Length: 639
Ligand code: BES
Ligand code: ZN
Image 1 (spheres, rainbow, N blue to C red):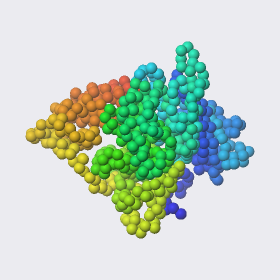
Image 2: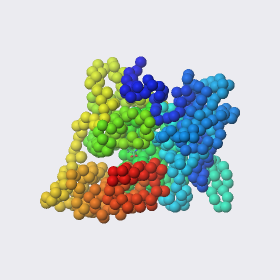
Image 3: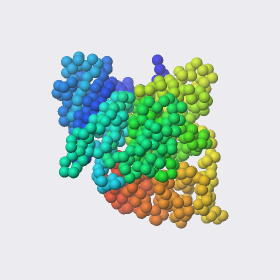
Image 4: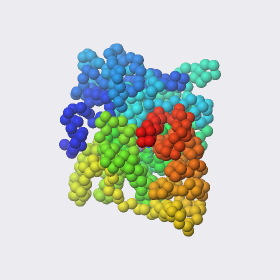
């Protein structure tokens, strides 16, 4: 029997039998029925901005299988339901259970229940609505070349339920078939199996094609993905292509072609051969709310990674790493999100070290991560539930708990374990763990049990593992112990920041010049800028402007730099950055940049912040729009 100590809150909950399943963020009864195969058959209707179609779910009856199948839905219209071809009674809750949506309950009659041996197929006619949180629809003027409409999905964490009724939990994995009809090229999170004429075009309009995809590796619902628009493709490696608008194609190809295959091979050496056949990247319109999203076959990426200097390919190392940590071995619930993101951050940094310069760079990246961790902990407060490695998310929206904490506390835990047992032994554990849970979902207790049992026969390692204070790592809020990182690359940045601080305090003797950062890579500039953000006295406006000009940050094409530079300017009310900040907020919709810029702009010039939001409201993705609205509410409460 595996060692599975449950946190007190979860144990109590289980005792009261409120949550009979591992995942508290689904309303489905996935302990009674389990989705094995999903067919998503949709028309992509750009005019009405909705998907219309039929979803087939093949469900396995588990021992507890009962006469009701309860599925997650959110803002969906249900047209009809049948079971094995016979119309079936169904009920869609009229009142939402926030933040989880409206459960759809389908009745299974005793004949059907008996016939389910053990599988049964349910077909559901469904339409998305304008309140769908998983899709963004862009009109032609909102796209880069302004010629065609565009649409894309983002399902993580619990938005798949606003596209189709499903067991929207990472604890359930299904194979998929996609049949998608669109007048424009389509991608989905499966291997393409063809594109056939479906309807001829009329009046000079393009005809509709049927695009089909197969995902034979079972995957959780949050990896369901589709996109359609004016897309072109180019090769970036022997098993990789990049997809984007025709005008952006060359720049995207250049950005990724050097590193992609090298990263795949480095990851294969650390874990095991890449099992998904192809690894491709779709570069989205600039309203894409994340840096990257690890959708199988096609990583979705923000166009801000295409900075023309190959300095943001770490996003690719990260999303590629998810092919193992997350996509093959998935967190069983969002409470164990660190198993996805902490492992992925760990692998990402191993890949970087393998390709770009060894452990010094890995530690440098970890130092940047530590700063992100510390920012998140300060933002929530050191005692906050969401600063725990395993937060209690009962009744919560996982999006609200999202922060750098699972990434960086998770990374630090794995880094600590690596150092504890020693790299050679740890390297043997990595493929073991990813083999053990391949195509399955895993929680922190299973991770612990697997680690302990792997080293059981190794006396020295076992003895070291008895030192691990599991409860503190798992359940203590706030900071983990800080490891000794190699600070060589960071020290150069801190030294330069010290000079700026002295200048800011009125001490002379430092004449800034672009030579200062001649040998810096972009991440070193990030460290410099973040250090300046934390000066006890905000950098004086005159110096802000000098920093922007001398080092080229004010006009940088790299949003990682220009956005941090603007934050410095906003913090000291440097008025010359207000307008460029507002402009940038109309050009990028990645929340990592949008959030701090709006937060600071609100404090400087609320009217301008409001105007900027109103102007760009339709440009922002629904998730990002909701986030900004919450920022305004919070600002109003604090004022
Ligand atoms: N899976 C995440 C993105 C995500 C997390 C979307 C939770 C929705 C809910 C992705 O792998 C990620 O971590 N992206 C990072 C990039 C990275 C290099 C750390 C991002 O978007 O900034
Ligand atoms: Zn990630």
